[in-house]
Amino acid sequence: MRHVRLGHRAPAAWQTIRRRRAAPGGVVLGYHDVVADDVTPGRWDVTVSQLRRHLRVLEVMGLRIVGLDDIARRLHRGEPLDGCAALTFDDALAGVRTRALEAVAGAGATATVFVVSDHLGTSPPWWPGAPHTLDAAGIETLVRAGWTIGSHTRHHPNLVACCETTLADELAGSRRLLADRCGTAPDLLAYPHGYHDAAVRKAATEAGYTAAVTFLNGRVTPGIDPMRIPRLTMGAHLGAPRLALHLARIAGSWPDHQLDRVGPDDRAEGTP
Image (cartoon, rainbow, N blue to C red; front, side, top):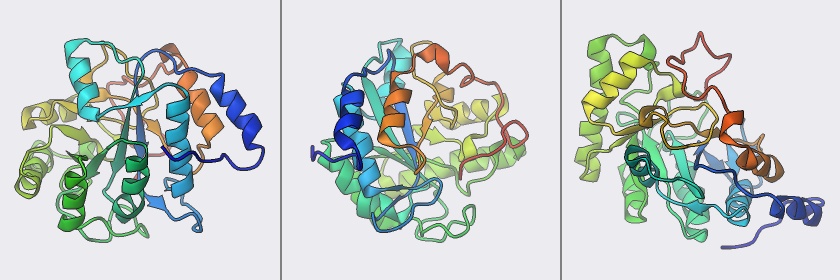
């Protein structure tokens, strides 16, 4: 992997990171878009250099990047997750192909991208001002590179507010459309904004998903619900030293990632 510097006072920062070790359990990192280094990143973006620094932190702390599907299988089987890390990108925005793909490949890894099936190659209506989403050709590029395609529903709604019919259409419909485009129906789901409740999880399971990720921070340990896999919310705010601190936190220090319901009334803010 290409080694990258942390910036000012990098040697001291790296020495601190090298002294840390990841806590027991696995971890899933939740990204959105990746922008060029000469662009000021938005709240939920990272620059290419930031992404590379994050990947370097995983390596230094002894974490191995695996597929999210591998983490889901380990959860279902009750197998250990120590030392495992998975990379995910929500919304399938343009920078995932043009920038994240190269950076992740440089770490000898792949990732999962969650696609809003009815909004390929468009300006995402759920995120005004965001770059265009990838078109079908861009998705195919990621598939050829070994990335996993997951569902982010058909239109990116607040699933908690959907009626039963709409809920089934958003979940099963997205899975069918992505199967037509990718050849395989996705088993992995990312809840838009991280919102879910018991009815949403039940509908997702009935639609054929075997695992789903939220946007509540936490570690992945045996025994948690595969339909409520926590993720670390990644963005420009999370520098390498802070990421290292989070990776060293034990599972018990993230107590609220298995909530039965998460919706707009339960969180001050949701992610795109």
